Image (cartoon, rainbow, N blue to C red):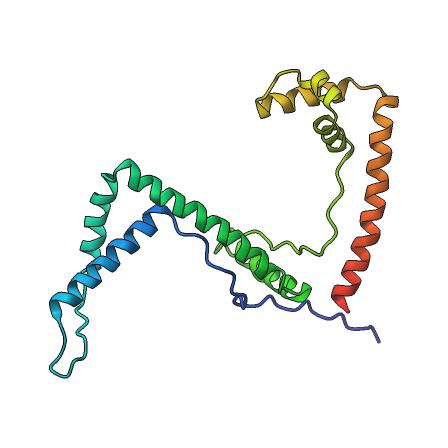
Length: 214
């Protein structure tokens, strides 16, 4: 009797993870301020019931958004700078929150979430990429990228290849030209290091995957 093959588990139909919310944009911050002002003004005008309970009038959010859009377009430079600072502060805080959240994820959490995201991409419902496990071994650099890394870390080599070139795209072109011009002997150290790093990565990856499957 042939051994029956187990069907692959179906990906989850929804995500069970709750990552931190991304930092709001300048417009979102401004609109939130305008909405809060409108709420406060409406509440002050509505007053309260005879029993003292505040009355919460219904707001015309669409009109508030329209008026806010006009006001946002004519913000002073000082106010623009204020919201720009708030945006940057929000981004910094988001990165901290994201790192803290990612540190709580288990390999199984990441595996399940990535299966969900892959299915969402396949169905055309999302373009989100997979989560990266911070504990997973990092893929090694190729021989060429080891060479590129060496350029950045060695002042003499950097001057020899790039001279005073500061434009990133042009630097890439110059580095590629230099790499193609290297002899086999000159490339050998990079190729050997790349192969060594690859073997170490494969060994670490197997340990990582075995631990995740345990």
